[in-house]
Image 1 (cartoon, rainbow, N blue to C red):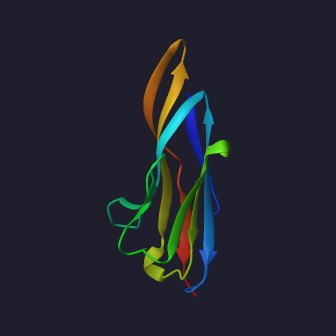
Image 2 (image 1 turned 30 degrees about the vertical axis):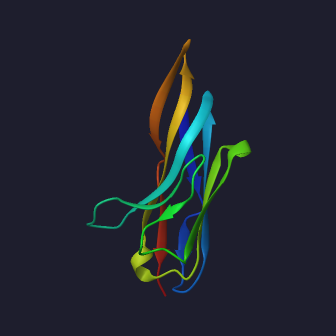
Length: 123
């Protein structure tokens, strides 16, 4: 079984910064894409940033130039550094990853979600 555990959410004032972390654990063979999504109240979940295993990062237009996604493959960890935060960035942030893991004697591909961490941007 594989899982993702996020940390780092909280309350921050507009214009402030916050960093999120997400660690993958379990019987992991490899991790391809690692992503951050968010879901604001009353809205659909949206992709914020993605970090493929061997490609360039991608960002939603709404966060370009303010958010930075990075990975530490040795630690099976993905980060999201959020700067110049706005009230409209308030949401539950979810880590997501495509993971190849071991189940019994088989290798299986999983799409795994973290439990979510709340980010509130408010004065």
